[in-house]
Length: 112
Image: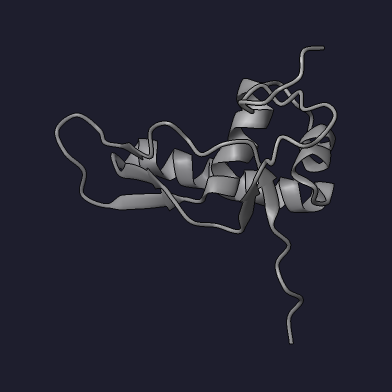
């Protein structure tokens, strides 16, 4: 029996959950919310994989796996002209009860 999947901590849900190429799309690729958060933290906020793992409360190898999968999906959508939909996944939203939250996306973020 496989180990149960651990929920990843996510700051907030994306403001826009669907992207479509100009001229329509032949198919749609689904990016999970935790994959989106990993891309946001590493590529936009500049977190290392280790920092991202600490924030999302999972191991660094899990983050690397999520990140690789997300990048593959995004590359496939860009090259293939597919739409991207962000939904689902194993995640919990940030409660804002932590003393410090420096992720850059939390609506209850503390000032450094």
